[in-house]
Length: 227
Image 1 (cartoon, one colour):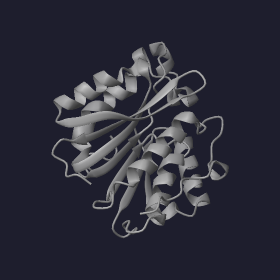
Image 2 (spheres, rainbow, N blue to C red):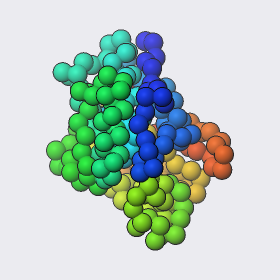
Image 3 (cartoon, helix red, strand yellow):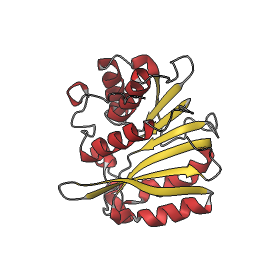
Image 4 (spheres, rainbow, N blue to C red):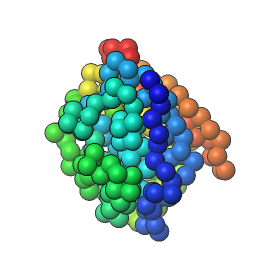
């Protein structure tokens, strides 16, 4: 199976209120593209990105599905993207439209997955999350605006720790997840937490950026069939 293309940064919408795609976005897109090569026997039918921001990642997924041989058609798969920031939801839509895949994704303005549960309980085959992972004082997390895209509070875990209990609820029996982290988030502890919920976890991609070392975590149920 040939690899599908990912979103073009030139066609991606962002502004002062929406996080600009950066090294973390590019590493997540690369990890997503690599993961897609394992989907020969089981393409994701329902996928969800939490915190879509500019729409760079969910658009990349839509393009991978559109351009890969054997991938499900729009009639047999459904993509969702959520963001609490209305400006980010608007940017995501504009990015999808610019790439010609606007009809591929349902957008929701909501906190994490609150607006989509219980509709997707046990149904998500692929979950994508680039959280606000930068360690900051707790008050910065409450500032809102563009700071909400990167301010992560203690250990950069404020939002990550809120999502962790939802992952076992959302993922299907064969579901898997990609999440951006940095060493300050203690990725090994996150893997141990998911181990206790019946998931395997590992670091599948790493990259040194300007002032941080990025890591992509992959989670999947231990009972999940191999691709």
